[in-house]
Image: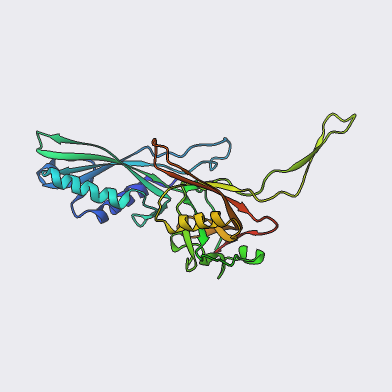
Amino acid sequence: MTMQLNPYVYAEAIQAQLASIVDVPVYANFNRNYATESQFLTWQLRNVHQPVYTGQTQSNKGIDTPTFQISVFSQSMGNAFNLSNDILQSLHGYSGEFGDQFFVAKADVFWLYNTYDNELGLNQIILDCTLYVPA
Amino acid sequence: MALIDKVLPGYVATLWMQDDATPTPLTDTQLGTWTAQVTTIVGTSAGGTGASGMQVPVEAIPAFGSDDAVAAYGIAGQRTGAKITTQNQPTSMTITSAWNSADAAMLQIREDGYSGSVIRTYVVAVYDGTDTVAYAFNARVGGLQWDMSPAAEGKFMFTLHPVGGSSYGWSTNA
C-alpha cells in the first residue's frame, strides 16, 4: 500500500535541493532572459510514475520514481563541468531527506552529455536524476 | 511510534555485523530486542546507534526467512495429497559484494570464513529515514568466492549460514 505524493512537493524539493548544492541561480525551465547570466541551471520534472499492481484497490502500488533533468548553463566550459560535478558528487547515491520535504531511498544521477549553444554563447551539460520515493 | 507503514524498495535494506574479531553473538532473546541490543549493531545511517557494528557493503540483500520444508503425503483413494510443514531452518543468504580488499567488514568475513567456527550476529535493517525494522540472526560464514571476471568489477561472494534453532529475531525502534 502506498500513496502518490503531490508533484508540487517534488518541484519544491528539487528547487530547494539544487539550490543547496550550487551557488548559482536555479530555475524551473529555461527562459531566454536568463541567457544574460554567466551561469545558472534549470530543471524539468518528468516521469512521475508508480507501478500499478493488481487492481480494485487504488493504493496497491509500488514506489514512485520521478526523474528530473538538470541543465547546467555556463559561459565557461570549465565552470559548467565543475558545477555538474558538484551536483554529481552531492546527489548520486544520496539517500535521505530531499529538499527538506520527503525521504528518498536513493537518488541516481546519469550524466547525459555536454553541448554548446552558439547563439546564446552558453555551454550546457545535461544530467538526469531519478528519485526513488517510498511513501 | 508505529511500524513503517509504506512500500519500501529493497535497496533501503542494509546488512550489518558485529565488529569484534571474536564476537559474542546476541542471545535468542536479544536478537529480538532493539534497545541496547540490535540497535548497537545497526549504524546511524539506518537508524541505529552502531557502537559495536559495521556495515557490510553488499550489492543487494538476498531473500531471507526460512526454508520451505514439507512432508508430502499421498493417500490412496483421495483425489489430493497433503503437505505438512516440517521444522524449517532459517535460509542461508548468499551475498555478493563489490570486492574492496581494504574494507574492514569484508576482511572480517574472510577471516570468519577461514575459521569456519566463528558465530556472529548479523542484522538486516530496513530504514525509511525515520524508523527501522531489523531482522537479526546468528550465523557462520561459508563459501568464500572471489570472481574477477573482466566484464565487471571484482565480486566477493559468501554465504551466511544461520546457526538455526531460534537464533533469529525481529525488532524495531517503534
